[in-house]
Length: 350
Image (tube, rainbow, N blue to C red; front, top):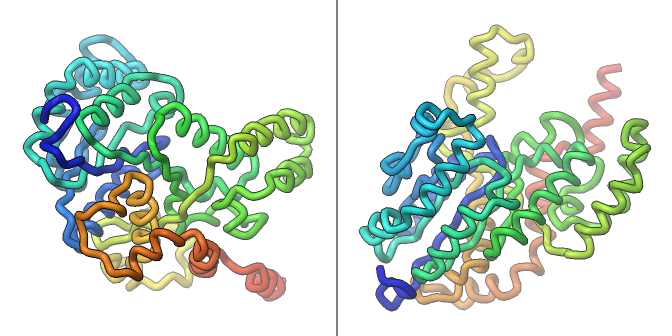
């Protein structure tokens, strides 16, 4: 893998970034499984030195180079400082990464990155690693995951928008923002607007007005208006909804099984068979396909010769945005409780 080329053919892939707990490792596991089923050779690269329990078959693991516990113990650093040191150490040893990646020439790459936000918003180590990969003829897209339940809190959603915009501007890669864990979107409250309002980041003045109804946020209305102006002036941020479910990993089932062990009363009326048998959960292959198509268009894979495509597939890549509203509506119907149903349940409760 020489400077400026990898053979003569580009290597395609994704760098999976996002805050801690947003589902990056689960995404890599699910996307690797999904792409493998359609015939792609996928190599997963773990760049998170704090990830000690990788659930997938890891072809390249940064733990062979440096680990966070060793750095914290030997250099007396905390977890955040230790993680930054690990990324700087990786940047200083790119020849190790180059040698490891050369063994998987012709594969599609998934880079599972650490969950420290400042690494993507203002620190340069990972940005420089991505830039070097581009020099090695890697065509990468950044996949930025955030928890979907932040949509139910206007203040947190504005923070998510600011973080996503900052990462887009700093990382300097084609970018796809993902609302992950769609099955838990209303875990902490109801959506104030339809799902497409959040995925398309429509007129945010409504969100500011909604925030102003809260006595705490009323005092910060001008600040929120200025933040919203910055987001809308750039007009870059939008989201693709995603729910990764497959036999080995199910967030909701795992949570319910933990409730069983605690003897929680919240489980009244929940089917015991559903809790005992997470392998029977349906896979949301449609949302995985939509995300894959969005990333393929971002990094250019969709326009290459790696896969034989019919005219219909090519047309869907060219005009896919025309059908985005209907796909978002389908996700909303699947995961978001309708207002009519919510009112009926309230009446029944009374």
